[in-house]
Image (cartoon, rainbow, N blue to C red):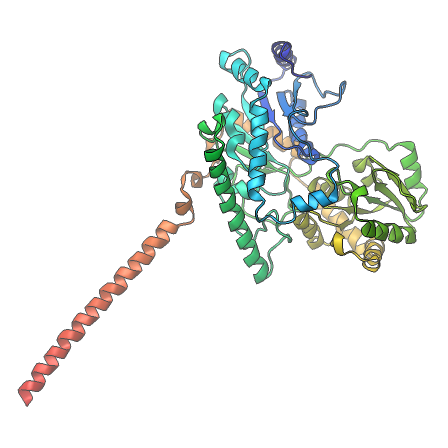
Length: 521
């Protein structure tokens, strides 16, 4: 169902009628603020669980469902594809330049988040939503949104006075953890999302991780403050709302164990769907390979055809030498394509990885794709490019099911050795199967967790008891700087008093000795 100015009221009525038979069905407003397919895949997985359970969902999305493919009558979309920029099929050089160094990039990331808020809150559908909620014609019960790096994401929850639920497609709450949950990540044990490692094991890693975390946090606070001052918006006048829940695309196989607030719920892999049948040409290509198949893709963000020629040729020459067949997601054609390679602009990744004849996944390290490999129990050769991908791959390296390489310094010899090692050394497959079993062993599925905890928040009027008291503390109180300052002051006072007392004792002892000496003389 699509939103339109003329049909918005009737769409709302249809959604309510369609879900009237569902016990305690809620009306939920969802907002996707980022233009990445992987971001929407995670958000849509959360929404699909709620829709399937009878709740009515209205979703602002830059990736609307194709006509005729809406999931249920209780699901309405507001098409934001014209207003929001989408990060799809970019050139590798552009992506690398954008993510080359987090230093100096935080301001741009915060601005990107606020620009998304401008587009969404300026859309006619937003005013329609607020007006119908205010008039009581179609009241919402909760808001679900991806926050990224600005608290402007909480604006609608503040205006509607309903509980707020955040979803993050990244494997950790990230730079906004202090503001979302009340607790900041400890850089001694938890790597920054943009760090190059999964766990800060050495002193150098802990030092760099602490510096990176501190810089990103301070830069983000200053960037938000500067933009609120230089580019004030209507949504800046509404006090930020802290979320009742944060759904995180995380699991213990992809993230080291760490303390989390009760409001944080890990639902890693919620985007995974039951596998479908493969197209005949792909199925035949896989099943007729006596030595198995390797699946090769760098996801939806980067154009594989934009790889530098020397790197591309290294891959082509190495892949031509191995006995396995290769399924390669590639835009366009190659003149020197090896005979054992099938190339397509799009491939059904989930269905391919689930086939038992797939021996290896060559990936850039996007967390959604890695969960598909983990679920299928397939080893990974990682070439992390940007963002959280380095730590994602490193965590699977720590699990013993992956090898990480640097794309821009790759050599043919090293690439061939690592491909052969991952395919022929059974320990990687064994570890991948073990990791898969751990990944699947849960008391509830991710979808069930989403439904339970969302309904829990609705039942308990926002579940404020899940929110940490630390949300009420100023930054200097949270880090005990006031306590430490008082302790330092107290120590100074004690030492000063002792010093004065000893000085006084010394002075009068000297006078006493001088008097005694004078009398004896």
